[in-house]
Image 1 (cartoon, rainbow, N blue to C red):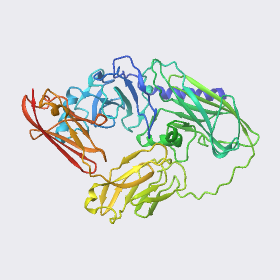
Image 2 (image 1 turned 60 degrees about the vertical axis):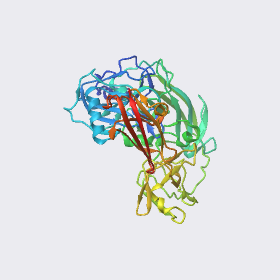
Image 3 (image 1 turned 135 degrees about the vertical axis):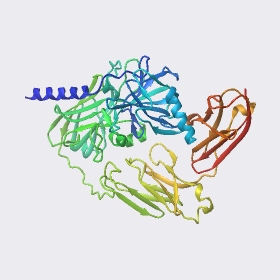
Length: 549
């Protein structure tokens, strides 16, 4: 009977995977090599697709992997950079990010929208009959735009109805892979229990034996590689067995975008902040509802009993079926777990509000993954420590500061911004989008830590290296724009008084017009004006003359 159940389970799993269409082709017609795979671990999110290498260059042809229509065009200096979405009649949408340029009618449609809104950044949807495509049609060229760290194509498959992101490997995209995942550590986590007489996580060795009591979970540090690639990628599944019974299965098939910050509950968040190390939890924190987990009733947590023996087997696998196994043994003991009285001020499944001094906070239900005791301290005038950065937050929350105008300059009210700084692990700092309403500064942070009101009166800088040397230029005009404070919010270029489309690459501090002729700029003398505004509304204007050859 047991064999029949196992056979049915395996057949159901295989059938589930076969339900996905397998008639897509790769959007790049070169030998495929990945620099990142689906659900790879990233700061605050799971990687949503495949990063396909483009031979360390830009401008490779991107083709439609199946019939459909261009349903969305999103162009931004950040994130996916230049991106297009193709919706297919089979119920799925494919996404292409970090493009250098779009092709043909798609490019014309994007430029029309950019000139209409007088903005490089646009995000708009198209109707099914506007730009239809056939499998193999040229749609764009690969690039390095947006948040890309090097030339590659970011490729996704989404459910058109739910917008969930799916593992592209489910659709038959074949990458040669004969390499087993590498497991560099397995830890035992005392949850409401102890391991080897202490309440700290313990690193195991293959075949080792450990004494435990109460409730425990496991953590796995692992990565995967594919043939012909040196990159360290994410794993596909982690299965945990106790005495040959499956108690937990993490499997990276799909996720919704509002689930992506569950990565901070799926991994050991403190470990990552302190050591830049990723450890997968094989068990669920109370507030983690990520659908990548298939759990038994105990959510992957093992409840141990005195004198019981537990044979632990953890399997780490990739999509190609390569599996690495780790084994060790637990022995239950009856030592007493120290009693700790906790009257948690923050509970993961309820909302939470807090007001003191000049600040007010509001957290919605589901903002945290587990209960904790909230702490607060006013550090200085207009500087506040809201707990600490080691506790991850799942949702943005509401923070308002009613400033002391005896300290701040009220005449400069529009130049103050709320600034977040971490107080755990790496020391990061970020100017937050700040609104000023009825004498109160408001923002929606996504982290805990130190918050302050800071004055930004420094305008951005604009230089044009070419026009500093000569006013005679060819077909390209570029500027270097920087801001030392809150960061650049807006930028516009005018030639002879007319707005002209310019591209912005923030990681290079570059604002440029790649093809003056394409923007209607003929040979001869012209006047150029560049206006750059930062997030504190400080504005810088640059004016000059040039002669286009």
